[in-house]
Structure formats: C-alpha cells, structure tokens
Image (cartoon, rainbow, N blue to C red):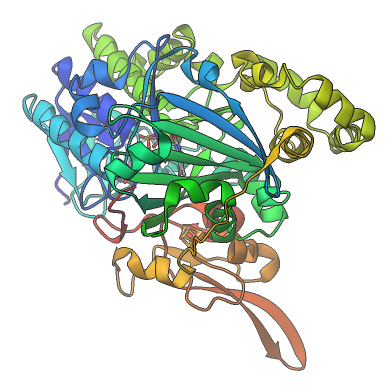
Amino acid sequence: MTERERYEAVVVGAGPGGAAAAATLARYGVETLVLERGAEAGSKNVSGGLIYAETSAPVTIDDLFPDFRAEAAERPVTRYYLHNVAGDRVETFDLGALHEHDTEWADAVLRRKMDAWLADRVHEMTRETGGGLLTGVRANGLLRSERGEVVGVTTDELDPIEADVIIAADGVNSELARDAGLMDWADPDEWFQGVKAVVDVPAEAVNDRFAIDEDEGAAHLFSGDLFSDVRGGGFLYTNEDSLSVGTVFHLDSLVAERAEPHELLDALLTHPLLAQWFGDDYREREYAAKLVPDSKKAALREPHAGRLLVVGDAAGQMQAQGPIIKGMNHAVTAGALAGEAFAQARGRGRPEDAGRLYAEKLRDEGVMRKLRPRGYDLVRTVAERDGVTDTVDSLLTSRLGRLGIRALSGSLEGLYGSPRLSAVVPDTRTPYVTLPTVIAEELGTRVADESGVEPPSLEERIGELTYDTDVGNPHITLRDDSYAASGAAVTACPVSAKDFGGGCYREEVVRTNGSEERVVSLDTQPCVECGTCAVVADTEWRHPRGGKGVAFDQG
Ligand SMILES: Cc1cc2nc3c(=O)[nH]c(=O)nc-3n(C[C@H](O)[C@H](O)[C@H](O)COP(=O)(O)OP(=O)(O)OC[C@H]3O[C@@H](n4cnc5c(N)ncnc54)[C@H](O)[C@@H]3O)c2cc1C
Ligand code: SF4
C-alpha cells in the first residue's frame, strides 16, 4: 500500500501567488507544505516584469515580505512612456499618470532572483509551522477520495499528500485547475503569449542612457505597425544592470497572422528608436517565453472546487489594464486572500468553507472588478465585431479621421492615460495597430538613429539556454499530427519556425500511396514550457517532471 503524507495545507507553486499563500498560512500558524517543480524557485518563471503595489489592494508583496523591495527587486519605475510607431516615425506619450494611478510603488523584477529570494523566506516561515518548501517536485494531479472528493495531490516524486486545503498557485498551464475541471486550454482568444530578451547593459550605462539615477527606472511601451497586424505590443524595462525587452500578443492573433514570435521580438529590438538604449555592443543574456491569461475573458468567478483553491495565473487572474500588465500583484493578493480564507474557515471549525470565503473576499476587496471590468463586457458586445472594427479603422485612416487625430493632438495623451478607458480597451486591431499607427503618421517625428542591433538567431538563443532533458520521457505528445490540427504550433511556438529544423515543431509532407499529407512532428528537447501548444495544437500536454526541462537564469 502507498504511504500518504498529511499536512493542513499544500501549496503548489512557488511563484508570487504561492509565496503569498504560504506566507499567509504560516502567519496564521497553519502547517503548510509548498511544492515547486523547478530545481530552484524562479527557474521556470518569466515575467516582463513590473510588480505593482496598488493602493487599493488589500495585500501587497511588501506587506508579507517587508525587505522585498530592497533585496529582491531591480529598480523602482519612476518614468512611464508609450511610443506610437509607424515605420521610423514615433509619437511618444508620457503615461506617468496612468502608471501612478492607484499605485503605491512599482518595481522592475527578474524572476529567478525574485522567486528564489521569496522561496528562502517562505521555507523559513513554513518550517516554523511544521511544513517547508520542497523544490524539484511536480504535482501531477489531484488526490481524490473514493467518493471523488479532492483530498490532496499526487506528485511524480513523492507519495500522495493529503491536506485540508490545496492551494493551486501553479501558474498559467495549471494542471490542477484543469484536473478539477475549472480551466480548459481550448480557446486561443483567452490567452496572451509573452516573449522576452534580457539584454546586458552595465548599471552606469542604464543610468546615462535613460537619464535616471540608480534609484530610478524607466518603462517604455511600443505599439503601432512594427508588429504588422498582430494585436499586442512591446515593452522595455530598466533593471539594475540589464534591460528586459519583450512582446505580449493575443494568441489568437499570433495564430491568425501565422506570425513568428521571435521575429516580432526582433522587429522591436532592431527598431531605430531602441538604438539609443542598447549602445554598440548588443548582448542578450536570455531568451524566454510564457503564456499569460487574459483575465477579462479567463478569470474564474468561482476559483475553487471542494478543498482546492486556485490563485494567480492558474485562475486566470492576469489583468491587461490597457498597456499595463498586472499579473504578479493580483497573484499575491489572491494567494494571501486564499490563505486568509482557509485560516478563518478553520478557525470557525468549517475548513470546507474556505473556497466560498475566498471567492467572497475576491469580490468584496474589489479584485474581481479589476480582473473582469463590467464595462468591458459592454464594450465587447459592440466593438469586437469585425464589421465595427473595419468601419472604425476605415474612418481612422480616412482624411477625415486623420484630421480628427490632428485636431485631438492635445488631448490624446490624456485619453490614453485614463484608467477608466484603459480598463475596457476592446481586443481589436484598432487600439493596438490602427490608432497608434495613424497617430505616429500624423503627429510623429522621424527617428534619426540607425539600429546596429543584430539579434541572435533562434538556434543561438536556444543554444544559450540550460536544459536538463528527461531523456526518453517527453512531457508533450501530439495527439493529432495533422497540419490542420497542430500546424499552428510550427509558427506560434516561440522556439520553432517555418524552415527551422532545430526547434520543437516541424512541418513535413508525407507521401503515401501517391497521396501527400501535411503533418507536423515534435521534439520537446528545446521546449521552453511556454504552454502555447497546449492551446493551439492537439497535444497531451504536461509539465516536465520535477527539476527537469528548461531552467531560466533571469526570468
Ligand atoms: C513576457 C511576460 C511579461 C509579463 N509582464 C508582467 C508585468 O510586467 N507585470 C506583472 O505583474 N505581470 C507580468 N506578467 C505576468 C506574470 O508573470 C504572471 O501573471 C505571474 O507570474 C503569475 O504568478 P503566479 O504565482 O500565479 O504563477 P507563476 O509565476 O507562473 O508561478 C507558478 C509556479 O508554479 C510552479 N509549478 C507549475 N506547475 C507546477 C506543478 N505541477 N507542481 C509544482 N510546481 C508547479 C512553477 O514552476 C512556478 O514556480 C508577464 C508575463 C510574461 C510571460
Ligand atoms: S513545444 Fe509547446 S510548450 Fe514547448 S516551447 Fe513550443 S509551444 Fe511552448
């Protein structure tokens, strides 16, 4: 018979959501075990990333970890700009007001450093209540009683573990949320794909090139025609001695345009506007990618099932507030509220009420209003129709529309900076491509610089990553290898590309009995575990076993 371990609480995942949940549980004296699949916390994680502490949030990361900003973050973001781009013409808006709205502070972070720091504190805190944090352990499913109730988790590495509460903070492709039937990975419309390069720039050069002091930082965002028609945008954030530069696109748009994520990133990196910040010696430390949910469509209204409470990306709690990406802060808040809910339910002798209480807290504290703004549902029904988008875009690009943009030139920055409007931006070509392009064409100025940046090839980028491959045990298998079912992954996978033989997905033509069939093949060795092909291809998709697969140094 299999041995079973037992804890009051099991938290799966040591990202910001899991760290916040575990720290909160430990503060309430709950015996808590944390399981993290990475060989070290942070080694699997990628973010842009700016972590916000919202004034209105009931819990922020520094409430739980007071030394966080001094020890785990890079730089506070003190300047915030949006660049509207059309070819080499650029019109820049200062979005400082939007960035500062409801913001106590916002810091740039790199996830390997941040999560490893959090994990050390969480381990200390949870050990004091009889638990601890184990790395290199992957939860592979929910443990159920004979009656089918969730009573714990199963893992690849350990005996089954029972618990009174299971907090799934296992990120965007949450296997636990899927196992519980709370999340499917069916609709590309509900996800963004983020791709990112960390670029080496000495600390003094960061200060000089962005005209900031060592305790200041800058954020630059980019939209317009530099990504063709793909809906999304680019970002550049200053770290202590590096830059985080990346793109975030709606996954359905990436698939529809058959765009190659690494080429879109290169379009940003080689734009002349960015030349001023890279200097002559462009050196990439790391290439990385990950899916993120679009909370407006994917955030679970009841993120719980029996003893299972789901927090952060696993529950779809990643908010795109116009150009501002807020995932880590909401994961922290949700993790803390889930921990609190269990502690209070246990205190009342009714631990089974924890899920209901957690969902109530998300509503009462205003978190759900941010994740699923009501206005967006209204905007969506009108603005997200192809006919409406086509009409609006034709108007904007007409002489009349262009005159209108010129007439509004003094007010556009203010409109872009409106927190209300930014919360309900429709998910169409208009705000991502057409409007910024027309703004740049009509109001922008030409960038004089030329870019000398030569980004590494995909082969070089993969070659620089660290993998511990689980030889003979691929974590993803193709259920249907026809091009019709799985071909979208050939271009959408961030480490694959058409005519590139060294990535995960390849397109082939198989000839049998005089007929030809287009199929795809898969090699998971270079996989960066972004989760894209779980959504856009017909796969049996799992994370690798604990400690196996890719390990990011930066994140
Ligand atoms: C390119 C990009 C840019 C972004 N920019 C920003 C930004 O600027 N600001 C912002 O706030 N957010 C940003 N995000 C989103 C942000 O990264 C996420 O919303 C946030 O990390 C969610 O936190 P989490 O704790 O829910 O999940 P994660 O941070 O993904 O953590 C999940 C953890 O669970 C572990 N895990 C997963 N499965 C298992 C398992 N089965 N067993 C054990 N452990 C498991 C993982 O290894 C990981 O450590 C960005 C994301 C991307 C990809
Ligand atoms: S194989 Fe799938 S999970 Fe891996 S990098 Fe490619 S798209 Fe992402």
